[in-house]
Every structure is written in C-alpha cells, then in structure tokens.
Length: 318
Image 1 (spheres, rainbow, N blue to C red):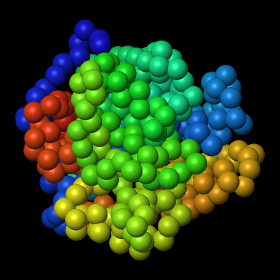
Image 2: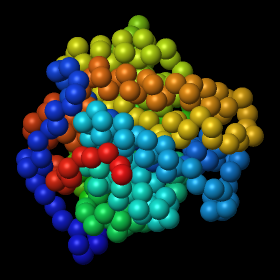
Image 3: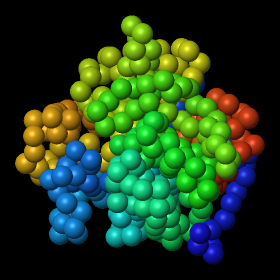
C-alpha cells in the first residue's frame, strides 16, 4: 500500500439519500475496462496489442459520472489495474466525484486460468496502481467475468491474505464461463482458514426453481426492461439488496466492431443503444449506493468488519 493511504471507519459514512423512492438500498457497480478487454475477445485481441488500440473508455465513463451526479447516486467502480496505470487521471476523476474505487484485477485474466502465484501478482499490481492514483486503501474486489468458481475458490484465501474485505465475484448461476449455482443469493460472510470476507453476489431472482440473472451486463441489455424491473422488485420484496453491474463500453454504441463469432457478437453488441436510457429509468425507480453502503444498510453487523473511505462531495464534471 502507498505510504499516503489512509483508513476511515465505516461508521463515519452515512448511506446517501438518492432521488428515488424509499425502499431497500441497492448497490450500483461499474466495471471499468476497454471494450476490447472483455473475456469474449480474449482469443481475438491479445494483450500485447492493447497499447496499440485507441482508448475509448473516458467519454462513456464521464457520461456515467454526470448521470450519477444528477441522480445523487454514489457507486462502486471496479477499475482494471492496466487501465489505472495508463489513465490515473480517470481514476482520480471517479474518486473525486464521490465514488468508491475497487479493483477488477490487473490484466482481466480469468481467475481459474491462473496459478495462485499469478493471481496474487495480478491482484497486487492492480491494487498498487489504484492506490497510487487515489492515495487511499483499496480493499474491494471483483474477478473478471465473475471467474471465482468452484474450481478457483482458492482465490478467496489470496484475497483475504492481501487485505480484501469485500468481494463481488461469485455468481449463483450456471454459465459457460462463471458461476457457482448453489451459492447464496444474499450477501454473506465467507469464512476461510485464514480469515473471512464479505461476499455480495450479482443479482438473481429465484424463478421456476432456477436462479434467473437480472440487472447486469448482457442481461440488462438483452432482457426487456420490464423483465429487469420485475426481477429487481422481486429481490427487494424479499428484503434483500441487489448489485447491478454495468461497463462503460455498454454506453458506447459507436465502438468499433471486433471480428468475432456469433456468440461473442450477440453477448457484446446487442442492446448497446438501450443501456443509457434504461439506467436513467432504473435510477428513478430504485435506491442505490455503493456496494459497502448497501451491505451495511442491509446487514449492520457488516460494519464491524468493513472499512471505507470518506466520500467526496458529489458534483457534475466540469
């Protein structure tokens, strides 16, 4: 950790009062990465080419910050370490707007494709890049493509050992790239031999005996918004919060098209033009805060084991 990082007790941070109807406080999370860094393009756009591709992440991220400032909503931004090294000013702009900075790993490598040593190195490098940018401790993590699975739960031990206290990587669904179907759908404390951390899973609603994913990424773009609203309302009606997740590239419908297979094209490009309008509507219909704020509002006992930073005053970008 950088020498100028600091800790502020969680109890000093009050949940925000968003301009939305009262109810369960949910989490809004943004995974900050370039469009060409997604797992679906991993075999098509190799990492050694990343530096030669023009960046596009800045404008949609700034648009997101403007939308959230207007709505009075703070969010958790999971930033890729590779990006933080190259655009620390973008990380500082997110932080200055009052949002929590968390790590999305360094090189967007699926956890289960790495050895424990490689994963630890990737995690450390990402944390260092983010802490150097904002001068504060970073202790919240989300795996690229939610890739902590039954085969890679060893990563939780590394996270705990490296000081991560809050994770949002275990998707309780079946999927060809991620998921632990039997995992809890509510936030929970994950105990390991070396300690514990809080897990805040992505949103699912139980339907017809299955966990139906709603309110994030491709599901947010591909499902009719009426279905998304229905699913999220069901989650809140059960008294539990949800953690919506989106990416800046989903607010960039003019992004270059990568030559890829039909599955990658469908998952990545369908519905890009709908994302901004749907988010604007969702911000008026549900209460949102950061991942930690939503967790503590739902489970006050989490406050004894979590720490966070004092938020900055929110303001639109100049």
